[in-house]
Length: 392
Ligand SMILES: Cc1cc2nc3c(=O)[nH]c(=O)nc-3n(C[C@H](O)[C@H](O)[C@H](O)COP(=O)(O)OP(=O)(O)OC[C@H]3O[C@@H](n4cnc5c(N)ncnc54)[C@H](O)[C@@H]3O)c2cc1C
Image 1: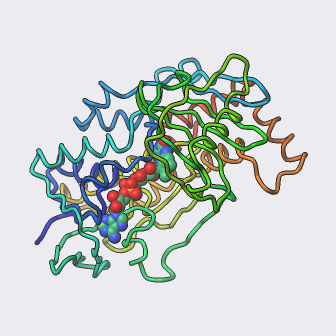
Image 2 (image 1 turned 90 degrees about the vertical axis):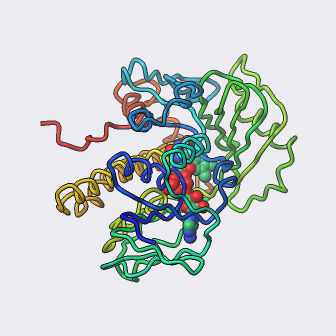
């Protein structure tokens, strides 16, 4: 088999890349280790930045998102017995987030690729990238796929990043001393907006996926097991961490899915080796507190599409050569924001009274200063794709 771009991974990065390339007349094949059912059911992100929404709409895959997604114009920071709203509509006019499950984005992209005649091969667990410096190709299940370029969109545990020779990549990493227990509950949200709650028992997040389905997260020890968390314990802990302001009561109901996620910051630089380009979680991970991972994946493949379109239109490798540096500017901004939100809102084993006072002081600043609140708001809804130029 031969294609122009061989894409490893049918997550948001790989699927959107394949679709954007198709719109530019560039051929690709997507190889995915898991089944279609599995990737369409995998519950993960749910907060889409304004720029992500714009990209999906402009690419013609936003119809269901526009109909079913929930636009949000603020979030609440809850601590010290009070809730404080960060009003996006006032701080960053015209920009908002949309709550729409990552698995719904994945379903929409798969449906559209297949309707357009795109090639996605599911259940291909044995992909191996070869000859990354020139004439690259992928092997799997006795087949060989030759391509001009390989796009490594295979997530943090994929095969593409490890196929880069030792010594090429610089790794920047931080592991946090806690994990997130996430649940989906068949119950209407208890509030209209997301609530980020910080307290002495640890962090909790109230979120949602639809008017009927709530999503909650609890900070838990890094070695926690789902067996330690029967339903009653989860609800009791959510109540203890979220019912901390007068008049707020959690609506409880059946838990329909649960998962544990490690909390990690990670960047591999550069995001390229020879003809292999890494995009999304294959190159970088952020703790989910800032809701940036999926959005960064979208931003990467937007840049990669332009660069590949430039290559095929003019033969110029200028944009491809700049791909890693262009993406990393946004990646590092999101790294800082995600780290900052995480350290602002969680409890740490190493916390001493001084550290807790600093955290409270910082929260007080964010909730009382227009400038500080705007910093949170503009990062949360997502900076424009062309951010980074000096202001004067
Ligand atoms: C609990 C949680 C909450 C989150 N919340 C948010 C949020 O609110 N907002 C946000 O923006 N982000 C969030 N994220 C992060 C977001 O889910 C990821 O950043 C996003 O999935 C990255 O997309 P991707 O396509 O790069 O990688 P993935 O979604 O990981 O996709 C990679 C694909 O490659 C496949 N694959 C792996 N190895 C191979 C192989 N060897 N061969 C072939 N295929 C392979 C995988 O099966 C997978 O389908 C959250 C993550 C978690 C865990």
